[in-house]
Length: 108
Image (cartoon, rainbow, N blue to C red; front, side):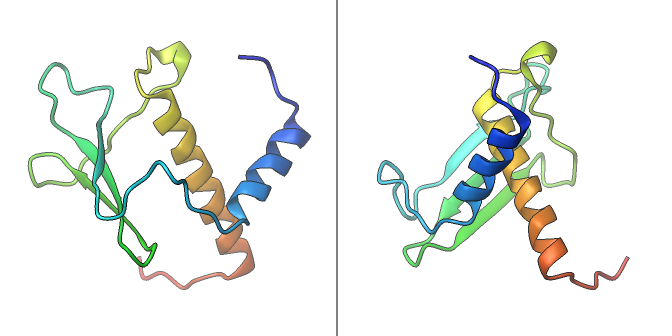
């Protein structure tokens, strides 16, 4: 994979995040699930994304019905789900941009 400049990365990410699109290869009401990289052979702990027919996104993490951090490693860390890791980075960036534009008060 060739290196991309910081400026180009930000421009492309913002372009993607600020566009309204649907990826034709995805199906509504079809769960897309991936097990995280640190499952230690148990294959427990996954993230699931589903889009309803109206285009709304639904996300769930599951690990024996308890809350736990799921890790999707980068290539240097032995990651097996690099696209998922990159998509999660885009999600974090989208959250940052939305929080800057439309701050929410969150009870802590």
